[in-house]
Image: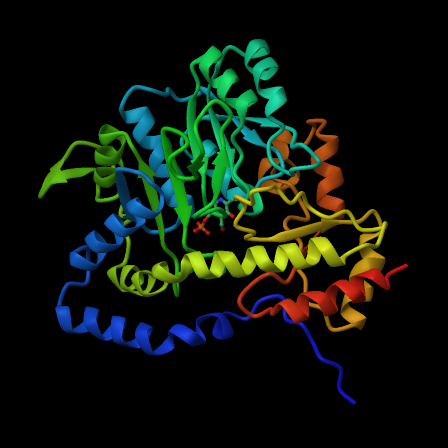
Length: 378
Ligand SMILES: Cc1ncc(COP(=O)(O)O)c(C=O)c1O
């Protein structure tokens, strides 16, 4: 008898419920005759701004470009200068760091907290005190969990840091910020935030897409101009810009999916709750489950010191998985200049993390079955 298998992620299945509406959306763009910019982009931007509680949203080509455009805008506006230090969690996806170095800024790698797997915010104050060239922090909301707390807010205030959010993995997440009444949405926690709509993201396009959200009108204007050849009006170029515009076909697709993001997030939270309750194997460390749960569970990431054996066990039992990420940025060949840095927590996490299925392809019963397979690992 063939065993049931549990795919890690299958984008065809994820998008199947939206297929008819997506085809209508594509047809709408084709019929409109507007293939660059236009009403689909404008509507998507205002829907996204509302979702992120941000006054401005600018659609761009992808998440990496969103980050690059934010840093370039900050440089053009005279708020950052090439060579300035930018704190970034050392266990992030490489795109966070690529944006910093592409703009001639200096990444300052800070260790993550092993419990949250986000930047260890208690280290930011001392990092800034020992390196006066640090002017900004790129806070990465890794795996869907907001990275912003009282320690970070205090370090930002004390050192006058610019806060850029890497919101690629956490659209719709909330941060409980002590001292504030209630929670704050990712995308509106700092001076500007970058979203990614890469197809595997919680709000996934059917190709590359991204956006910048901000409450700062100058940053919004500069990003929009930089993404359009540096042009603030037709044939008038104030910056040496790029062509990093959002494709209106992708905007139309995301307008189909955006109203369902809250449901999708509720499903991810329900799966995380099932895993949290059902996985009891002491060899497997579960991620923190906050209450209330502001995390949007882009990934549900467990850790085990015996990862190779664990992966063989998952494979033997038909459980799909992924590793985010096996090699941290400072150990990538392109960043050999940072390879000497001692970042033991980052390196340990990279050797232990395993992402379990947590998308629309997985049911709560699947999560129970996967948990019981995990509990059999010894
Ligand atoms: C944390 C993080 N930052 C940035 C990016 C870059 O986004 P994109 O793939 O849209 O360029 C990604 C996603 O791939 C990401 O996960």
